[in-house]
Length: 241
Image (cartoon, rainbow, N blue to C red; front, top):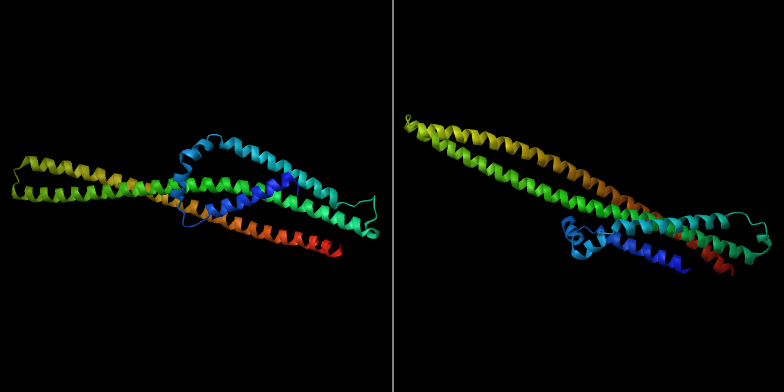
């Protein structure tokens, strides 16, 4: 394996390791958000789009080169009769195997690069949705507590007004508290609606993340099966030698 394909293979293994770490269930999205916002990560994040595009170009070029090599060695060769030259036949199969191996390595490295970017985006969005949901719940709880207090004060004023009907200030205060209570109820309804919307968005984001995880597992299984199929011709060529 040449230097460039060794680098791509190491890059692919690093991607698989990073994706596995990002999918660990015991590391919450909020903790990943703290890691992403650390000073070290933020220094690289300033030029993250440049790094991403550069790696995309490199992987695309290598992927196209691998496709060219596969088409080159997969086609018929008229220069040498492979049926009567077993050594040349084994050499042709070996070159085709290497070209197919490079094609799979470049293709999965390219696809894994997009998966990593998508996972980081989903984790950041999930952490933001959780923070907003918790803030909305706290606001709704505080509004509910304020409404309870106003109800208690309203009941107390009613009792005072019953004992003294001529107390004009108590009646006025009761009206003010009733107005505040109505406003608090409206605010509470608004916060509940916002909380329901954020919970709906959070559930949709969670389902999308689960779908991404299942797709990655499926592609990883296909990659393992492809490696097993590619290793079989190499073993056959070794036995014939």
